[in-house]
Every structure is written in structure tokens, then in C-alpha cells.
Length: 185
Image (cartoon, rainbow, N blue to C red; front, side, top):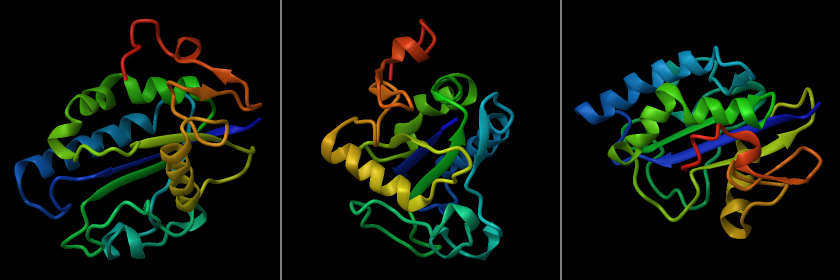
């Protein structure tokens, strides 16, 4: 049975090392969200570096998730002092559990504050796609699919929750996967 991969990417308003209150809030909420999502039904795993204390996203060992990559439009810092990005890569059993995890609870609360932390851009901030059972998506997979989504819109190869496809390539909709009272993006 195929699984759903979810890649997120955002450009922060200030570097990850910024000691200001907004950056601290982002870190604090992120830690709580990861703990909560890690227990969510349908969650299979996420890219985690072997040792996060040894550098930036770019020089960490991500194991089976591959070498860290970013979209071509990210033209900002890559050092510990200048990096201004947040990215995640996760694996789910299906669309519904991933959608529910993203659009409810702590993560929903963080989404409501995303423009406190992240720049507004013309680029999509997430993409989903299907991977074969047993496959681990890579950072490069996420980047190429996010760029494809930006350039071509939703397709079975790369899509959003709101313009989604089943694992066999059939178009499906948010009404088919999401809670009826939560249709807003």
C-alpha cells in the first residue's frame, strides 16, 4: 500500500539563531508540535538528523532521507548564523491522517501564526505525493515536487490537500478527506 509523503518549506523572517521572542516561540511551538504529531494516528516518521548539534540543515546526516536540499528560490543563508528556513519531510499512511494532523490542534494554532514567523512568498509552502510501500522520500524528492507544484499546479506527481489525488492518480478533494467543519486553507 503506498504511503503519503509531505514536504514543507518556509523562509523565516529572522535567522534560526535569532535570540528574539518570535524565534523562541517558533522553536518552542515546533518542539511541542513534533511531539504531538509523532503520536498522531497515521504518522509513520519524519526526517531527523543523526546529530542536530553539529551544524545546519545542509551539513547534517539525514540518513535514508538523503542530503538536505532547498528549492531554487531559496537565496538566503546557509550557515549557522544566517540560515532562515524551516523545512520538514514526513511520511503518512494516507491523506486523511496527514490532513488532520496539519489542520487541527497545536499545528493548526501554529498555522494561524505562520506570518509572525515566516515571510509571505508566491511559492507553495508544502507538497504531498505518494511513495511505494517501504520507500523513504528524500529531501531532493520534496524539493523537486514542490518546484513542480509551483510551476504546473497540482497533479498526481505533486499536489496539495485541497487539490489532491489518490494513490492511483484519481483526483480527490478536500471534501473527501477533511473534516466537514474545516475547509479553510
